[in-house]
Length: 166
Image 1: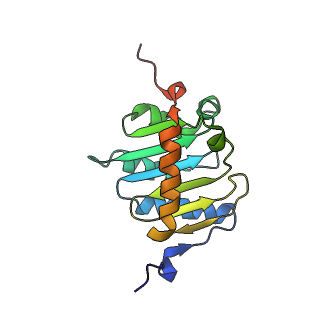
Image 2: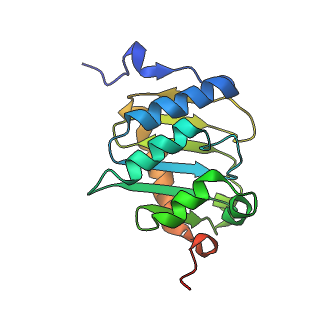
């Protein structure tokens, strides 16, 4: 018996439209936790009404809910008024954002979305809309999860996104 993903577990991820559909499917399939790594959070990523609704659902799913984001420049998302920033600020204990500080991590051009049910979307270069994705592929997810965890541990909390308590 192999751990290869079932054919229907693979998702097309060869262009921007397919990547958007893959993100939506993966977010909808997540139960309580997702990890997201994007060098720059622009208006084409995690900003559609459907993506935001799924992130809100995850963030408010109760005990064990966790969304972790690694962003090279969270200040840009704040300045650009990205739609996810408000949700981040409303739920800072559930939506945690960190900034890579290690040169190796800052120079890493990849982007990925990892779910708690074995799904992932991986783009070797966040600037090029192509990658690979699967609804369920734990062997494919494992090295991405390890890379995310290592980057997360080396990163610092994104203080720029914290809401001001006045």
